[in-house]
Amino acid sequence: MNQQEIRDKLVNAKRIVFKFGTNVLRNEQREISLSRIYSFIEELALLKRTGKEIIIVTSGAVGLGAKKLNVDSNESVALKQACAAVGQCGLMSIYEDGFGKYGIITAQILLTEEDFTQRKKYLSLSETLNTLLSIGALPVINQNDTVSTAELDFYGDAFHTSFSDNDKLSALVASELEADLLVVLSDIDGLFDDNPKENPNAKIIKIVDDVTEDIEKFARNASKGGRGGMKTKLEAMKVVTRSGGMAIIANGKEPHIIKRLFAKEELGTVFLPIENLPNKKRWIAYATNINGQLIVNDGAKKAITEKDSSLLPIGVTEIRGDFQKGEIVSILDTNNVEFARGMINYNCSDCRKIMGEHSDNILKILGYKNYDAIITRDNIARL
Image (cartoon, rainbow, N blue to C red; front, side, top):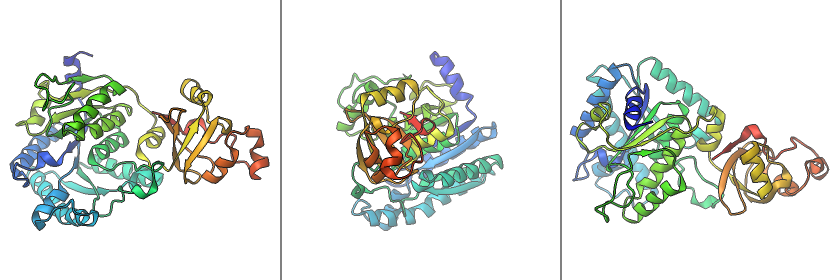
């Protein structure tokens, strides 16, 4: 698609998730920027009147609470959670008051990683959000920093939470709702081919067909120069584009940015959809906590990536972590690179007993046999 076709598709998106970063919601004095937020609200209200379904994922509660309490929220996790509890009330009241002036009802939703990891909660959340949209309400979503357990370093490298920031949260919401578009508004113009703070000749990348390793290198280079948020944004872009949606990163401090984006101005970096995973595989790939790792040999990797095969015990060479049957694990190759995720059929103890063995030997080794495969093909999502 050329730039015009891409902008046409962006403008025609019906279901749209908007993510507002902390820095665009506050001014240079690190106070809440009411004028900017109300500008966002006005332009979103106009979009909603055209028949679009709008969902907001917002940051800002911790910063707002810290300002009210006059404390440094970085002092401890507990203090950060306290700031979130104080700030969330004020933040939501701003959205409720602003949208209320346009006759739009808002709905507050605070989420933790468990709301995505547990399949029943995930499906229930999807039903709730779809119901809210169907009755004309506008969901305002934030990570529940007051009770979130995302910072679980003590689990070790084999455990990873489904999200620990609102960039990834917005992508998971967009994926779950099968949104046409995710708009991430931050204090950056988009993705650059180098750090613009250090290289005045750095150029913005207007269109990304796929978030490849080469594209990810731009974020790593940028992080050294202080733009550490780009790495998480690219991870979010992967989730959305592999779920069949489009995404854009743009500068929320630009005046009337939402209105201008939907007037087809060529602002920001647009990420094009490359895949549309089935709902369950999207959940396995991106929405769940990772409770362990399986290292597999080259033959098993080839079977999974080229033939869409199940993972048999004979292909597994190492087990890491502590997991139970039905939980999600990473599948890594011999170079320690993750290439898939899957729902495990046996617990970690039993997996260690049968790894490297033929499936015919499972019953003899364990005394029972649930499946021939450690992970069946329908429960494997390639990354």
